[in-house]
Length: 131
Image (cartoon, rainbow, N blue to C red; front, side, top):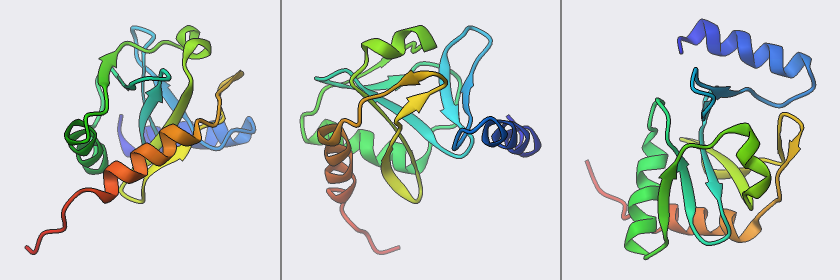
């Protein structure tokens, strides 16, 4: 999605009382938010959306370090009707490895502090390198 469209949908979401816009593709799958990657928690594993999206740098770091830490991860199609079965959701980008999502549309999402802490711990585990 281009910058103009992202801004348009973000503004539409804010006018409706939301903090941001989460995108659903033509196949009904959640993909990403306006400037964020989405990640979900099923109680045991990190679930990454299976949909066309821009994979962010922070997402790559977190995925790599979760694997190194032995944390289960999987990719799955996540549709809005799947949200009630999930145990948490976050957005992440270059500012943060995870901010809790408390609801998507009318579906409340659990805070999942263990999930959030796990993502932050994984991000902090990435070794710093000198360019």
